[in-house]
Length: 563
Image (cartoon, rainbow, N blue to C red; front, side, top):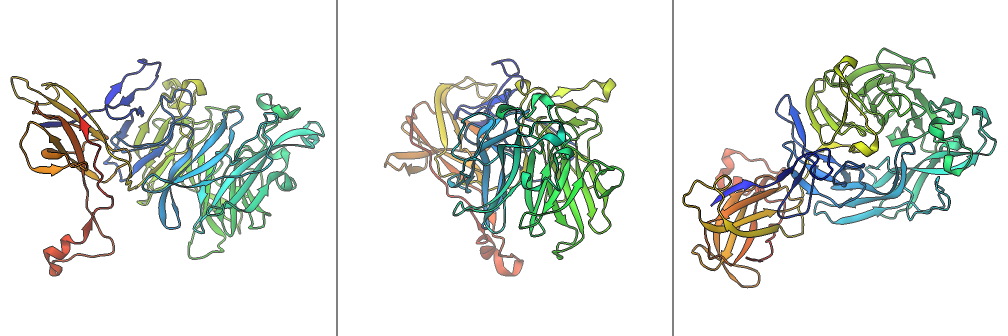
């Protein structure tokens, strides 16, 4: 008996793909190969992302590890914002799925799906109503926008929305009955799906006028002359809690906007230095940014004038590109003195990124910062001081020549893959499905299986369990033509233990040197984790120490496979 990892790598241009992907015996999954560069030993956590766009050979939510191995392959389709969040003290997976309109429109109408640690759907959050899109007469069962999913401690979800409507555009040289895309924010009770709060940008034109937009009327043909050419002057792309209200990000106002719990605009931080009420220090300018989050500098004080802002500063857009590199920024904002100082900029100067859209900033528990770069299929992890630690690439990206400083640029959607956001997070997955097993009868391959000669007839057993994080080994049982420790399948068939192999990667395999095996069943051996609420010490004794370890997940047998 021998064991191995069995994922096959499909090279570039084999099936029209411009990036290699993986294939397996047991499941029809084709996740991308990850090109991972680590300057140091990688920190703990799985990668959560969702490949999309034309050159994502497989679109949908993925969990992979820092060695490029698949952990969980979710359903096919859009999965914007995919990641782990906490809902009422339970770790859950969330993502948006629906009708997505790609750039230059860059928005969508859909719902948010929530799964528990067993990969069972426990909620679907929707937003009904008479929303209007740029497509005449289009209607949708739910109208949550693809940009934001934020679960609060109170069991609510903050999301964004959009509505195409008519208004007076004479202030920017347009018609009095022009068409615009109104930006909206909602807070929804997850349990009841009731809307608890709503905010609409057109109600606040006094504080957020059309003239503040860096996306001029007529950009990319969006003149506002009719419904199909509605002008997206605001482009909201994040919303999250802040000081009893919310902090919003407007891509085309290049601004962080604080609003109260009643929706009033409290203050606006314009990222373009020299504009607005704030004085910028060097390095604090930003524009076309995504994923703004605000934190009190002293968390014990709920009403402090000093706050920390995190963001993914794209600094690029489809109408302004490859001038300033994209970076993660941590800014210190003093609301009393109206000043902005740069705490840390997260930028890999040896391989700068110029992302025209999407992306996020994710603070890790150890102080590191993880950046997803949206329209460029690259993730980066930095130390808290800004040193590049890891680079992960999952798709083809445009490269800039060394004479122009090198680095990566966004390609047309037809030529690339993207992931709207990306995270690095811990996760325990306990699927309720059975492990997938494939058994093939053939000759032992010396290059892959063993050193024995002559080669023997036998069985190749392949096993995987989508989403299972707690398996450390596989026990293989069989019936017919062998000797071994006796066991029984669920249908009463007598089985014998054939082998125990370590779990290696997503799919493990073993060669069984037994020609007479007629059926096979596989059982996972589960990891044991230390119970956090119990401390062990020598005085408590070995027996008590062992009782502090337990399995997080139930071991589920595979189906009985007839060879």
